[in-house]
Picture (spheres, rainbow, N blue to C red):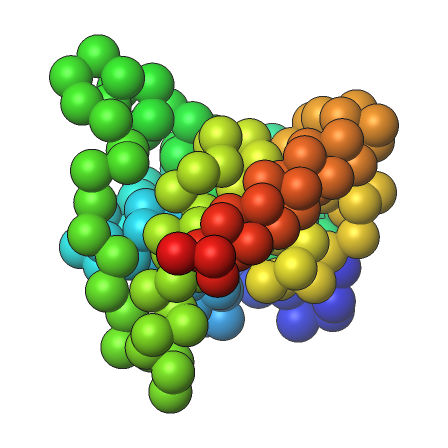
Length: 175
């Protein structure tokens, strides 16, 4: 964990310094929101709501942060839990596959839409490991710790997701 994160966390815990927590939110909100935008197939409003839930939970449970890993690792673990809770609530009423996938964050909107459509074929646990690994650059070991998932399961999920995505793109090219 970097020194500035440690310092900000200490200020929040010792002095209940809300400005210090605001700095942590500002530092990590784009990454968390970006992850949720991809996980929700481009639904920006939902991504914002989920990201807000993450930072509320992180603040509420900051005293439980052990600093064995980086703050971002802990935050992604909370993000994963928020997303899983959300998908469980969806399964009672609807399906996560129903979202439109339009993103104007990238120069090539067509390829972003293709990627969003491709990600729809993945199960939630495959999608999250693929995005954390390829989009956010985390190692298999880091993802394993983040998601409290055995290393072999992380590797298997990435492999399965890659196979599904390869098949999806091959099928799309033959259409």
